[in-house]
Length: 318
Figure 1 (tube, rainbow, N blue to C red):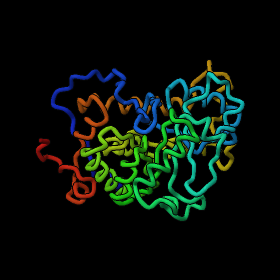
Figure 2: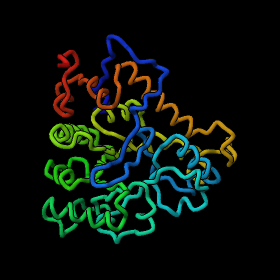
Figure 3: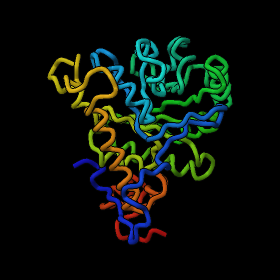
């Protein structure tokens, strides 16, 4: 049983929200803190690790549907060269901390994450020249001058990072944080709990992206309730990538032509499903936004309560 299965949502005694209403409060704003122009996504889902070879002839259709649904796509700029401008979704680009600045990708991205991990995926940390939060702030300012002051820039940290790293990122006025969790759910719950404590003091509106490989809708919703503003849904969509077995050239199969007028599209249906689940959960818990949703989350065991910094089921909500 996953750690997240030890957490449950408490339904509201009275439900003032319509289950059919699609809550606008599920949108995500990246910035502004250090940046000037906020970038807004219409839903808290990010699609990443997806390239044209994986989708074959359906790549344009996929991008179009992501754009229509207001979702963020994490991919390099050259993957969108053959996509019509009107079909290009908001694009996030990851710049590795110890790699040369990728100017074409940085200057054309809508959102930039500076991932504080080496390109070899072996070591996490700041650049060697960073010794204090003031140095980190100056470093982010230098990147902003290269990227453009209107582009939100965030810092990618490892799950389980200490409070000093989180506070340093906040003090440096990163527009958002990205927590790379993978399958480390217990560490993620602990990290989000510590971020919640810090956010109450000085960074209440800080956007938090969680990069996870979770495949469960229920788990992704609980990660949002634990304090994430947006989560990656690559794991949730992974069976579509694998639908043709070992070949990944056409994971959407032949159900769709390349035009956007036909349907249904499996990935679009899957994204509609997870958004509907979120709408229903917000309604059933009488939550007006994702922060309210977190107030409805309870732990079933003392262990889960301690790790996630949540009250036990049946405890007072005051």
